[in-house]
Length: 89
Image (cartoon, one colour):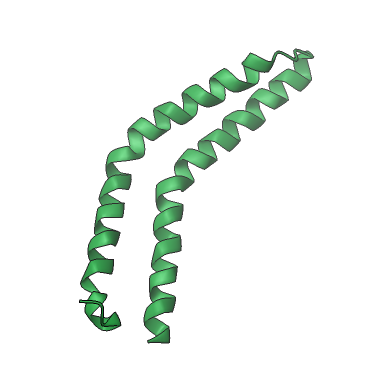
């Protein structure tokens, strides 16, 4: 029983990383790039740091939403398939 719970937790973390990871990485890279540009040019405009990051995150979200939803659907099916092992069906 303990191994099943550990496997479920590992699968949950892997699924979360696969779904949210690309979006977070793009936000981080664009944020660092814009911050570096602002530091080099001494431009301290607030919207300059927000708008490129927001646009990049929205574009990546639109690109990865279909595969991400498929991963979540597969994860949900695996969880529901294992309800018998927990005695919940």
